Length: 109
Image (cartoon, rainbow, N blue to C red; front, side, top):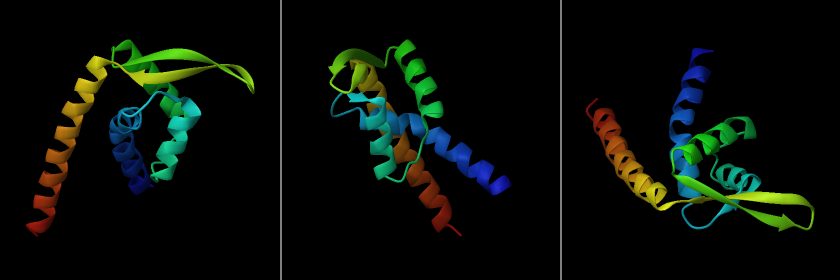
């Protein structure tokens, strides 16, 4: 069971970066964000994504707008703000540095 917990924590740690990366190219509805994550084998559920989106919005990294839907009520589309784009750039550099450090550790064995 410990392995599964560790994997879940590792995944949760990079989920924020993945969500911001998915939103880099265009605004998306939550189900579209989840589909993008799923296509990349980063399975996430609404219960973990919604709180993260709200926190990122409250921190000023995301904004949103409403669009009418032919299939029901209006939909909220999330998008990166300028501070969000800068934050994503910083996270991207940190991610590259982290991956390189882990690789160096793994190759020293």
